Image (cartoon, rainbow, N blue to C red; front, side, top):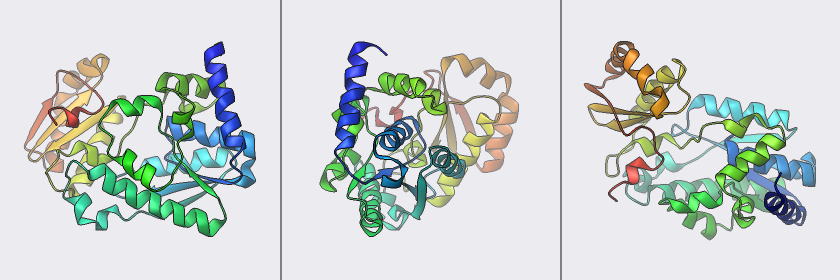
Length: 268
């Protein structure tokens, strides 16, 4: 590791070392896996609890991946039902959607942590997360959830570098976001729409494309993949169109600008 990154890593370890018993909001993604790993290394697995929300907004295979990762790190994981799908403010899918979702998540995590005897709740935001529209950040602050990677000034590239150095298989895992981010603001979030997106993305991933977003525009599906994968989408356009038509989409479109995070925030 380069000297600057080593200093950040040391700062992260010192910060976590002063925390005692911690509960980590755990998705199995790059950031939360690194955070969980460092917590275990510094505090010991007996002082660390992984908490994972279960909801239609998260693909089901992600939960199983998270469970397997927690087991590999020797950490007990508690999966709990999050309550955002019962909140009309969240389902309305306004600009504050993420705030309502994260408020439910962090309230549940804090209560479980309290019941289990863990003094602090942590989550895995990094510096680069501050460059996009992130209303969920307000919920994090309001609920007193700490963000050690952010506080250590670690960006996404540095998180991946540390993950690789520590032998984590997630170091090159594509970034994920909840399925509700595929639905345009103002379009109500429903279980049906979320399941349509999950099924469509799973089909495309099975073709060998790891990073894909299927944006749900009512009767139209807009597919985003990385530039290198555009030829494969074109090559496989007939089976893809057939599957997405079976799901219920009338139109299937390929976004020529390709995959980009926060594309649903464009124009907001």
